[in-house]
Image (spheres, rainbow, N blue to C red):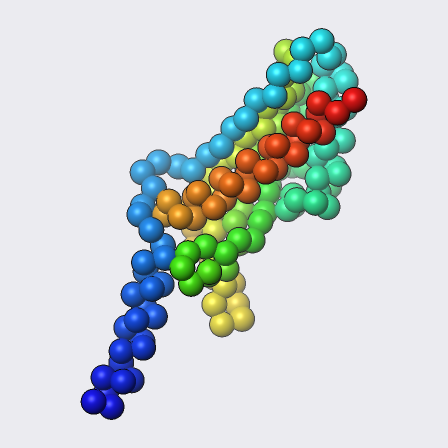
Amino acid sequence: MKRFLLIFPLVLVLFLACASMGTKVSEPVTYSETIDVAGVSQSALWTKASGWRISGSSKYGFASATPIESDEKSGVIKGFYYNELTVGIMEDLYKFRSNYTIEVKDGKVQISFSDLEYSSYFSGAWFEKGPVVTENMANKVKEDWVKVAANLKSYILAK
C-alpha cells in the first residue's frame, strides 16, 4: 500500500504532463497576414512599418531594435521574435523563437512568422527542445502572432 501511495502521484503527474501536450502538428507552424493600404506611397508605408518594428521591440519580444535584415529598396524587414507562454493543463512555461518577415510592396504590408522553435523551463533552467510539434503549443503561439499582427495593422492604418 505504501508503494502505491508513493508511485501513484508520480504516474499521475506524468500522465497529466503528457496529456497537456496534445496531438502532433502535421506541418510546419506558420502565420501570415496582409494589410491592404490603398493610396499610400511605398516610402510612407516603409516608414510606418519600420517605425512599428522599432516601437514594437519594447512591447513585443523582438530580439533587438535592429533587425537582421532591413532593406527599404526591396521593402523587406527580417528578424527574430521571442515570447514566453504557458501551455497545457499543467501550465508549463515555454520560450518560443520564430523568424518574422515584414514585406512592404504595392500598397500592402505583410507580416509572416515561420521556423517556430521552443525550449522548456524545468527546475530553474531552460532546455532546448527544437521545432514545435504539438497543436496545443502551435495554437497558443498563433494566438500571440495574431495579436502582434493586429497591433501592426492598427499602427499602419492610424493617421
